[in-house]
Length: 198
Figure (cartoon, rainbow, N blue to C red):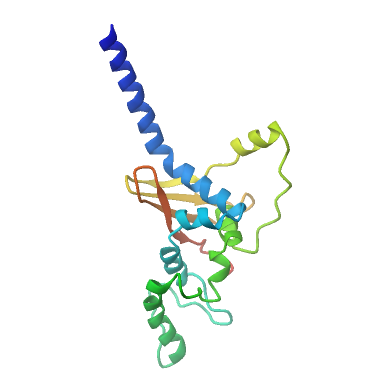
């Protein structure tokens, strides 16, 4: 009898472990969104690999007043020598990312407000204002009924989520999280929608 109860407890523990293991990326996304909404910079520092996210956005966000090069197209040193030199030297600044400010074109994407807009599916600065949060028990039900991000890929060490604004389902933004510990995940890549106004 005792042996059977121990076996049932062991199976229950395995099931709970499996659920926690599988749901950890979704909770990481929701924690990232909550930290960004509440301007929790320390929490964001634990959940976002700024160097990797900055590198992922570098080629997607164009310099103000200059068209971004097409994917796979190199910057022409003869037409834009300064732009070519800047693009060639930017990767060397990545190891110093905590010490050097982000390029001006990327700054709005790497702030807490910008990350919050991204997790809602909007380009930073284009999100509509949120209604004031409800009070009392309605606040708990509103938090539980928030839409979850759509799963795009689930792997043992990497997960991708898709998010879009409610009114524009075609403008999908993809977030890639990488496992750093058994239940810890970190944002390492953001892919903006192809039609994003950058």
